[in-house]
Image 1 (tube, rainbow, N blue to C red):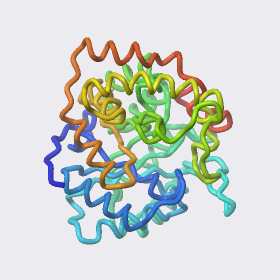
Image 2 (cartoon, one colour):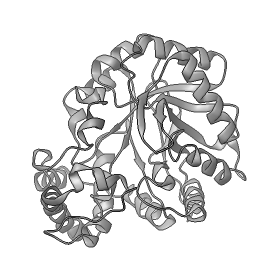
Image 3 (spheres, rainbow, N blue to C red):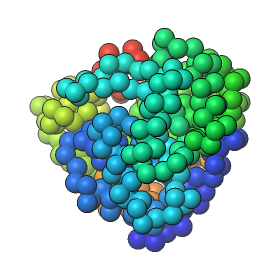
Length: 341
C-alpha cells in the first residue's frame, strides 16, 4: 500500500505530523495476544502510507512495545519517523499498576531506558502518561524542559489532563499536544479542555477514536446480544465498563444505528468514526490502534471521506454521547484522570 497522507502541524509549536497516526499499544497484549511479525508489518504499512507519527509507552508490555518498534524501524531513517512516548506509569511483576512518578529524577531514569530500548538518542514527543498527584505540574514540565535543552527530547506533550493543568504547564514551557480520548462516544473534552487547548495552541492527538474496537464492525459482528462480550482476562476490554453485560448491549445498539449510516455511505463503521473525528478540525490527529495491515488500510481510506453538515448531524443524532452506557475506564483508573475532575 502506497499513499501520501497529508500533514498538519501539531499545535502551535509541534512538528508536522501525518493526518492520522499509528498507536502501537495493542501490539503488546493490551487487547489480547498479538503477533510480532504482523505488528511489524503494520508499522511498515503505516509508514509506507505516509504516516510519520508512532505512539508508544514505556509501560506497554513492560518495554516490549518499544523493543518491537525498534525492530520495525531498523531499516528506516530515524529522521523520517516521529516517536511519541508516554512514561511515568509504575508497574509490578504481576502486571499491576502502582501509580505514577513524574519527578524530574524519575523522568530522566524512564527516558534513559526508553532511549536504549528504542535504539535512538532522542524522542520526538515525550509525555507523562498521567498527572502525578504528588508532583506539581510545574516541576514535571521544568524537568522535561531541561531534557529539551539537552537535546534528548524535541517536544513536550501531556496526556489526560484537565484545562487548568494545561494552562499551568503551558506557562512553564510550550506544550506540543495533549493526548486524550476523543470519539463519537467519548466527547467530554468538548466542553472545556478542547477550547482551552485551542486557545493555547496545543494540538490534540486523539486516542480511542474507535473506542477500543467498539466503533467498528469487528466487535459488533463478534458479540451476541444478551450475554455480553467474552474477552480474554488480559484484554483491557474484559475490565472496561462499556464492554460489560447490559452496558455492551446498549452500546451495540448505538453502533448498529451508526452501521446503518455507514452502509448508506458504503463505508465501514470504523471509517465513519474516523471520518467524524477528522471533521472536528485539523488540530485533531487521530491515533489509530491498528494491529494488522488491513486494519491500517481501512483507516487510511477514511481520510478521503467527506461528511456534510447534514451527515454529521445525522451521525451525532444516531449516537448521542449521553446515551453511552458505562465509563471509559474502571472506577480506580478513572480516579487517576485529571481530565475527568
